[in-house]
Image 1 (spheres, helix red, strand yellow):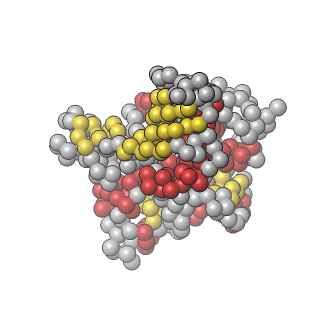
Image 2 (cartoon, one colour):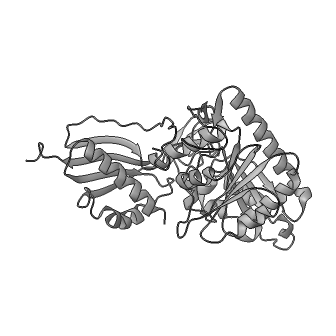
Length: 279
Length: 119
């Protein structure tokens, strides 16, 4: 339920099976049903505004904000970009993004180690999506909890930086299983950190039954960003085609994996425009 | 420590269901949690009393039933058990598998005490 503002609510997949007398209830309900419902609402809002949203996840310090700065620089004049920044404290990251001339909303979570759909919803209220093509949601740096919360994004992108070691996917399978794309960042350090083998990192990812692309990038070497930028353009084009056909898509799910076709479905009803003003 | 937020979500759902049935007390809660759900049963058990205090589920028994990780191979079609960090087909070794169980995060069963069902 949209408790923040009471705006148009979307349908949820929650199913309740009540098969017993009043004293014993058999229910089959996802514990995160409330979050998932809010996330579906966020996605419907983004779809109504034609915005493609990406949830960026990684350890603290893997280079999410630097990657965003370099991406904004590379796509300047080509695509409209907005950013939602999640951190425990400070406006530092939002200020870095605003310095690039892009609107940024900072969410400070206090002690919470992840963003949830409700926090993102409140941030969307403060963001004018007019003219925005891509929304990056930079999650709190953490390879554990963010994987469990759908925010309403269309794709999950996980960063794995070279200094972290190539076995991170094996150590954090829940996160890396939920990734639609892995960016191996700080690739300019590979010559100095020979213990990191990109092939090994990719192999750890495949062992999690994840076929997501694995790309080497360095925010300091803009020429290494080509495949990442092309992935963004291709995903945005595919999403526009889906929206045109009345469909949308969800990220690689945290829960049970589904065939790709099941991740794409009709857009639930959504009644308000890009300014997200509720009456 | 997102287990605390999970417990909050759990108590909200449980209380809503209890109210629907005009129950005065929740006596038993069964969760089904998979190793790939991102939730740690032990941490959920620790967080539970903190969140349940003062709710209809304050004295409920919380039972967490772990589920098994199973994958279906898209190459050979076999359904086999797998480990959290190794979701390969147990029959042919291929990595192109689909998870069929092991990521559940489910509220499966509740027992309630309502005035008209009390002994």
